[in-house]
Image (cartoon, rainbow, N blue to C red):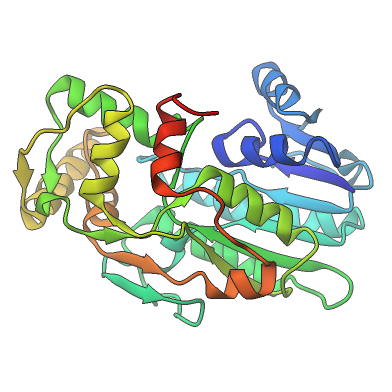
Length: 322
């Protein structure tokens, strides 16, 4: 199968590319020479283009598109979030159809359903919230809606995969930020890290992407999670331990954390500060609300079955096991 991938230089897209490289002919969007080097190392032929100028001919008559690119920064303008997550997805859908691709696998997120409230044992029947205060949630929701509506039975199959809190070897975001917070003395638990959460090991989203190339119902979304749920305290403590760090016991109540984050965001907006703030309302909310999800639909329709348990995943993250 010939496959075009966006985000193949990133954590999720890169892992998917490496999993698929031995069995498929892969092409990947590369917006810079550095990006081209990364996607080439992940087994793809780099194609120089971006969301602004990608054309049907760039897809090399590909059979499928894996759309993993997104704006996932903790801070940014509405324009930045919308352009990357919504306009970029719309552009890829249009180009994929014009190029004759038969399948479009979108990497979504459970955050498309997040408005700050607890999400307890949700399945895919859960509706989108009518409003959300978070730009990432809003734009990923709008992107997914467009993906699922673009499905054309027997002509153009569109699927959205919703991993929750992707972790594992190769992560350059979550673990890096945690280590920076601990090393600077800034780390604080929120509500003592008691929130329960589903998580998704990196190999599991790669497995689901591979399955979605041939299985799954068009116009449908699928939660992708590990076998085991955990608390945020268990997850963060174990992740930091792989780097020889301990988080300590300093704690901030959620209400105070949200107030402080909101105040910081106000200052950042008032003065037009571009660098990421030390904390945001979204980061506080998404790590302190319960988020437990059911993956039965993926198991039944994609043949999805988590392969790596929590302990083994942590050993791999620590470099103690291949």
